[in-house]
Length: 541
Image 1 (cartoon, rainbow, N blue to C red):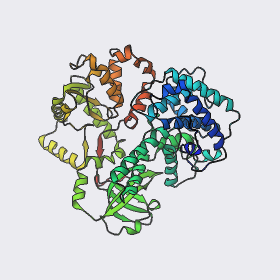
Image 2: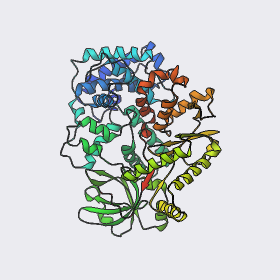
Image 3: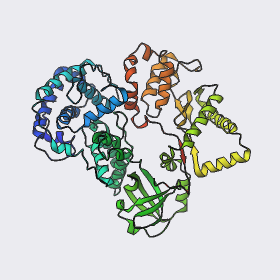
Image 4: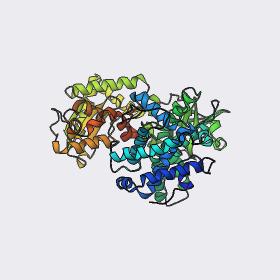
């Protein structure tokens, strides 16, 4: 526990590998912070949550916050700004009467300790109101306060979070996102540790074969586009936009980087500027800019199958990730066209469509009619599939379609799009005796199991007081359960749930949206479970 922190420990949280002129100063400061958190009184509280190696990491993490403010890298200040825009206050949980933005604050350090403890481990939820958090934060604040006027700026560190306003190259923009997610102190205990865990699993499962490097590159690239931070459930591109600031000419361009589409495409030809490809599962056509692809000379035969990833940047589709090609294969084509997962890769391109919103509204109205005006139905698990099928039959009848039109609609759905539940309706009784069907107005039908006792409602005959807290915790912490279902519970049941009415949950009500973003991270934002396809539809704008 008394071991010094050395420069290699400090550099783990930096976007560069070699020591700079200011690192010696901050390393010394870092060791002072470690002395605070490893005193007998504080280490006794922390050892319940941290491993030995985590003490060095926490010390470097908190000192990096101080360095960030001194060097004006705008990492912490961007978090505070976004939080303020969302919730009209700088931080969750704490009294902010004496709070100074863009300066060091004991409340900042309290929050960072809470965030670190709840991110490096997920077995226990640590309250932000623990006395030991306040005590450690006050002592560390005193160290930082003494050094506030003396600390040197790390100009080299700042350079990693800047980009030219005239930059056109997507790969340079992508590199900034990579630095933020995987080489920045604020997200280190979250996104980098998650990535490292994934990489260890990949290496172990691949037995270090010849494809390991390929798999690692593919995983990191996919994660760069998909990963949401526990802080505010934002993606790397959104943090890049915030850190650059609205006045930066590329700020909006970062916001509008598309999701990554990865899968099988058919090669359809090329000209001097673009390679023409068609997404097999959906039939959508894309123009891939040659600026991003070095293998165009290997593409000779139309309908060659390409496996690749693409993303849109500044109105152009760029290659990203890994690539390989194979000859035309009708069996693979058929499998792709029948794959819901592959078709959903492009679903986001149509979520803006008016017909998507109209379809969801029609389904919601029909669900309410079918379910006696309620958005939620509580059922024995063995009846969920039956309920689900009966509802969709009811919905089809509301459209007043003839039998021929229904057959044609089903055929068209298989050929051009689909509407699906979030859960596969199968084997529910193996998980729980009871469950529920909830119509989520932002996505469609949602099925949840082992949560019924979180809903003390007259329409719920399966509520059991003794199961209430356990079911509520599942509702809150399970990432597969939507934000909308949690908020339905809070809006309709909080006064009847002991956790909120007389328990510690009452302390969190003002910050519940923040906590849902923290707990649900990847699934806080709900997308429609609808996608459209079509051979005649272009996807270039």
